[in-house]
Image 1 (cartoon, one colour):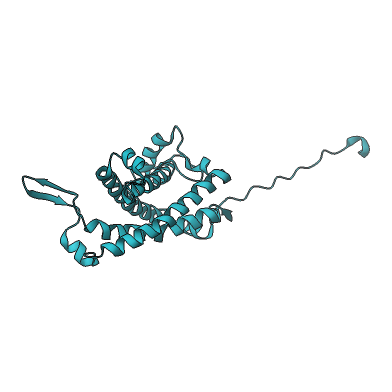
Image 2 (cartoon, one colour; image 1 turned 135 degrees about the horizontal axis):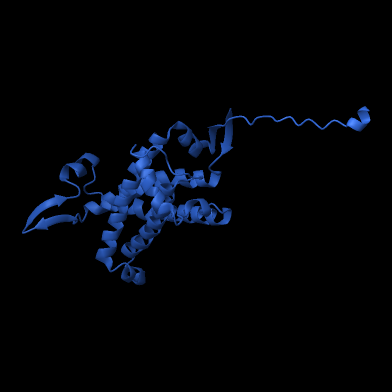
Length: 235
């Protein structure tokens, strides 16, 4: 018997889907800014052994010479990114959804079992409620990463006005490195997230859109209780 069950509230779905285009624009505009000073590479004795983005990458995306455009988009949408994140965190606290998201003591152990199950090495997955242990860790980490992006972004954006944030991040140069590393982390999370959604199937994806999922439950057996006969009345 198929049963429709509510899984994701409207506020959770709204902040989830709004964040996708915002992050896409933030990463794209960040690349326009990064091209102006593409300094993250491995160089030894004047020879570059590794560079994050080769010239053909910038040419394919038509990134060169668009610094001002990148800064305009980046500094505008960072406020939408921050506001959306604040609304998401506030909702999880007020609604109590944080209980389903925060990792538990056993989450790190069970996350390894979830990984083994996803790799088809382990047959049975560990028990879970709304989110499994790996999802708890990943979703909590992405919130911390979002906070880190805002702090490092402000430290880069206004290093004089927010000098205390710049100092907290280890200086302007190190704040820029942290900001770049967090961006790479977002891309990695996004790729893994999409793969997990595909593996989970259509029912899971539908629940993130509609808020409901369809479950197959066995009907409960109907037990008839026969009242005891009154022998005295019969006699």
